[in-house]
Length: 143
Image (cartoon, rainbow, N blue to C red; front, top):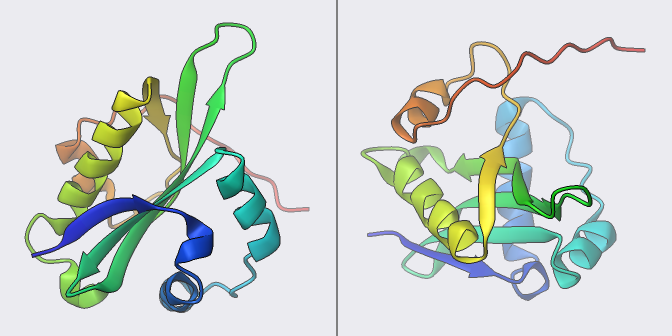
């Protein structure tokens, strides 16, 4: 059974770094995390790091940024990452991890979670189960 928790990023290095490297490799991305900046964001409360552990080992994570609107004073979370190692993607593990994240954020006064998803992403069905709604369409021009 997986154990979910919010953890301080600085307390779980280099263990989380190995997971992030696996995630980047799987996604075809180059690992280029700016750890000092992420640690600063974590320390000041802007970034939240959640983990999924199996027998004490980190096997998944979710990271979000929480900001407060200066106009409305409403807290909104912006999803950065949500990942489980392939062996732990069975059943409802991904949904359970995100429900844990949602509960923690809601207890902190966050009103919504937003995320950007590439067209055809494999997690869109999980987002449907979590009652996410399509809010807008993003366009990108690579320069």
